[in-house]
Image (tube, rainbow, N blue to C red; front, side):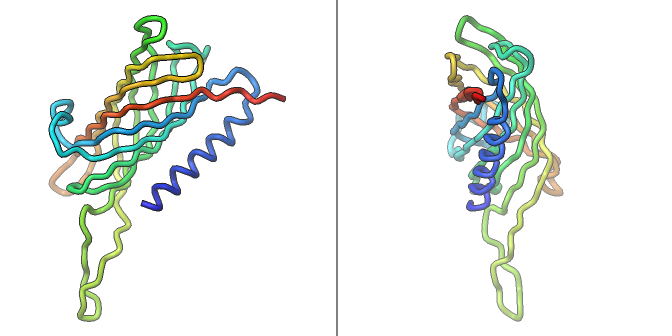
Length: 197
């Protein structure tokens, strides 16, 4: 848990330092979201309990004119707590485009890649000098593909949204070639003000 928190803090500081150098109209925003995670059939499984907590921190950059219908890229860290199949975090980057549904509402489909770092769901022991001691769990890193859709409300500097993300984590183990993970989040993105010279 401490490793994940440290990773999130370092990501935030590094992104903020890069963005602070921008001197024109800011195309950048920082965001956070919280919600639940469930492994299973897309959409259907999200309505069943138990579900597991999930938290996301992201940085977004818009390309072209920073309008509601711009192309954009996100870089994010997504954490998940799953007592059955292992907790961990995912580093991901998605490309998306806004589709206007009115003056302030929009639909934002995204597609991207990620790397999950998952730890064992239960403590594992190993035999050492005739005694069983807790084994070190360094976790396993697996590639993933993401499909995400956001529906949100825009103001001048804040974007509030609800998102659904389907992630296929590959090579989970010898029996499961890919693990479908569902995320349902409520989040906000805040547009950073450009720095002044």
